[in-house]
Length: 486
Image (cartoon, rainbow, N blue to C red; front, top):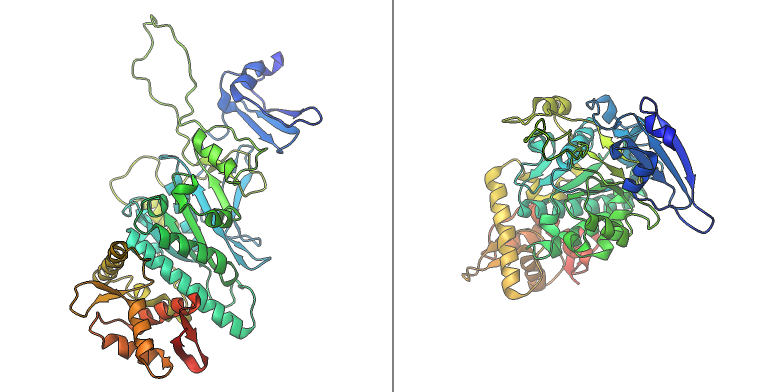
């Protein structure tokens, strides 16, 4: 091993094997010490989860810098994959946006500590969605600060938890509407280029929406699970980006976690507690081991306390933002780094490099056949005043439900009856159906609801909520477009 320490101008690769009946475990500082290497960032270790390991020693850290992403990188190949970064050996790290072999929309989960590069990685995927004609719906729950350039380049955009709920409700409604259409047409899968565009619903800083004590946690968890269950076969994908991996930070739902871990899981810089949780939740196989990702690539060096040449304010080494692992890829414990997107230095406004990647063309919009299902929120998405009203209604619904100890509603609401309390649109629809002598069409239900003294609603918003009630079994959907109480 002593010759390896001086071979600093070439790449050295070692294949290791554990004894029969054992699996490979390693301690990176001890491994580097045995190899005579002072800089652990030069070493890459991959295991197969069993007896074998591949150790590669580079002259310098191969991921210290990566090239900028191009639009060509982000065009889907015939397998539905885009190039998001490079592995330590320089080969492309690819991520699937769609699976053409099964017609399945994808689920996405991205973890990383603060400053690990989640926003830039998400920005890269949003650019790819626009380039490939995918409809993007995005809730940036950092008040729009995470990916500000995306605002005018996605189809539906929100920055509050209330807007996220509206986006999720609309996404579920579209998935159910497509299911009905596809069933009537005899289709059992989504076909890219077959009429309807692929739709991705993204929640950034999702832990704010799903963490314990968050006001909309229960409803958001239900809606995300529903999208995961119903969206795959109708071209509706769901993606979450979050700082924590603990189950309690993601809705506390084993079903939700099991559903998402079958999708594309990206892990950026992590903490030891996050790693333990990933293994415990089955997102990382128990036999796999990942190398820690340092905050910077500065080599730790001990210097005499009496060294007069020592700098008191030494600069940090290069950062590691965007470095991580594609846990769902073919090489889950091979370190990779996302391609650079945008300016390295902070800017006072929107990044022109990122805007240039998005391009000047209009983003792909939701198909007209699903506009009614998407409801009033989708119709009002470009009207700040109307969206503010809808978000206020969502907040009033939640406050009313919390005060009554009941579950939240499913869509818009209104104030009526002189009580000053919010009446959920779902309750108003059920009341109208219960008071009728016969099954009602959607237009007749709309007239009855708008005559009950509450806030006036649109046909699209009513159909959205009505479809949700029917899917849950609270309303019976009859022939000829008629509805009756279940």
